[in-house]
Image (cartoon, rainbow over all chains, first blue to last red; front, side, top):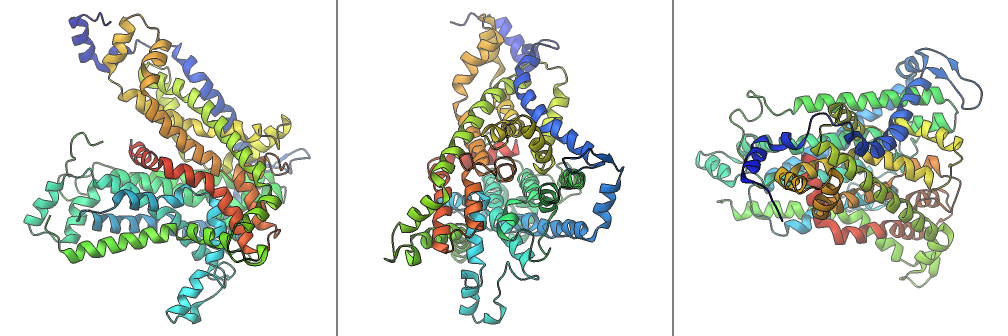
Length: 324
Length: 269
């Protein structure tokens, strides 16, 4: 069937992808048109409208009046909104930092031995990711209730004095929601890191052990640097989840008790659909978006690939060929 | 590997604990849903499910979720195959800018789009219809889908495409006759991921279809059911949660291997 002349094949192989691409091909835009149409109409255009609305005082019914930066100033001066941003930072610890650390410690331990039942473990660890967040919220509401499993367990080990209605207590509601987030994310982190670990060349560990490296040194010298791409993606996923986070809070505490678990997304919903302050809600949404882009950007910069003075302290470990 | 047996045992124990913690909340709602209690009387059975099914309208919700998710997946896969193919194999004018904008789209919070979407859908008289969820969710799925298919098409040896071109196939035929037949696994994993995201999406449903019980999605119906106190019995609420989780968990049991490998590899690319 192929009538390909050998000479053409050589040229093609040398030119790689370049030769298949002709110069700028305007007709290629036709292929992009349907996808871009959906993206522009239902994502880009709404974002532009949000940015525009954020400079107005608008209740959705009467004409909007321009107010300049006032909605943005409110975010940084109103104590309630400042608190919401602070709560987001607390959740960042529980939703992103903690799961990544748990995942790293366990992955480090797993890198040293042959794991039995790895496929099953992976499948179980991933379950929190596939459940609807509403289902997650409903089940954790029961576990964290005054007569729930967490309190029963505390009583069992003699810590009955610590029991409380975790989601109903001003002091414990935010960390309790944080731990639900940790639960949702740690399995994802572990599964990602496990996938990274199988690509590490085993002989590196053998060599490290011959040189007398202990488990800790082995972890910092080999496992951690090799997992850089997985750590980076785990942080992107967990940070965006932490800062977006509406579903779990809405279906457990609605921001309460009081405002102890309020976060920007809850105020965005309430300002827009209950208080009819669309300008304020839009400004908050824009700030949230910039915050996510900023934090993701900073974290990406921190875990970026080439830095000779970085964690590994030497040449990065080579990977098994053809495993990706 | 010279590692002590004790260390291996400790690590395995940690893994078992981590796995149990990961599944326990699901197991606990299944157990409390099967616990007859106040709803049915006889201690163990499916009474809670009958009550939840009847009061919560979950039959409609599950059908509506399925219809919305399947439509979103089908349309998204079609449009992102075209776009991914162009971005992987053609010299697209402004291609780099397009990719950069799509990359930002991957981390955007939905919060920044929902208010204008609400106004748009309300102007188009689509509020409280399935379209109010289908159209935006296609748009929001485009970035992931385009990157996914682009990286698949870019991984196909270029010689294959050139051979087909020299045989006289048009660019569209190259995609339809050469690439799509081998794209099954990539499209399959992408479809599973998109289906999962669409099925579980809550904020958009809460804002765009709150009034119409016929098009409420399963998570939204559960949220109303669990929040409204219509089910004072925790067993009934648990049964409702199980009903909503069941289709996804069943699909997950069947597809988990492909889903996890696909996600962990695709995510890093």
